[in-house]
Length: 417
Image (cartoon, rainbow, N blue to C red; front, side, top):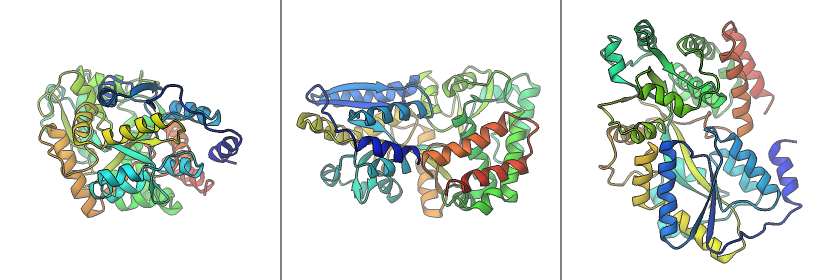
């Protein structure tokens, strides 16, 4: 019996209870870093501006594991929040429990089907009904560079291939810098692994491995190469990386202590919060070898069934605010992401966001648009957890065998099917 089956059994024994205050919208999320907090504050201000009360339910932890643990406890007790940051296939699993509220009326009024790309809209639906609202689109396959550090290390251009990436890392180390800023947490290890996988496998084989969960691809020679590259990359990370938060790793690059960071575009929110300017103080480039691909992570708020009419009204207003053009631009400016629909005037966004919008369109037209495994878009949480276990164990064991790791990865996922 998996975690969601146990939760479904528990939920059947309780009834939903109304929130305490009329017109209250309680939102569970893990947007707690500097840039993320500025982003979520834009949402709170607009909901409160409509006369509703915002109850913030922030649970720290960049990968969201702690937040999901708290959410399951609340759901079992019959007291879920109005909205929770839930992503990808996990939305479907919550929908199966019968806990989510249909937002078809709000969606029809706002023309969500017309505005959203099918890849985005389908994720927000359960059995054809909208039960979640997309907040933004993140690109995971970014490499963040401090150009001043590169210049000091004698590197005159950003790497475009893995060979160039490792050559740059060698030069950064030789110049006395930390080559790659990283936080030793499973979701961060998974993010690095995912970028390497997309680079080595390409978008089609990546899809077979992490969406179709094809055992032959998961254990094949290219996956062995992915683990080999991951092992090499581990040598460019400092000894104090274990347990470091992602935003602390970003700060190392911002402050000139490290040259590069492999991280989704939420990292840009930290550069923005530090007063840095894209294209001048930092560079954003597609992770080497992934040009033409867009590894996406969509932040979304799943909407839970509520009994109180005023609270339901506040919940619907939350959905309307999230999909408003003004909010989409402001949130992306602070979060580092791009809007969920593309026919907006995005001239107020920086050069990294402009590049991301163009790359999203190109990838959507060419088959390069792929869901993130590390960020719960490609497969449910139990699959993600199995991958994280293999990757993190390998990452923290320098003498591990890449071939054996690929076999373990395939075996771990096969056991879940």
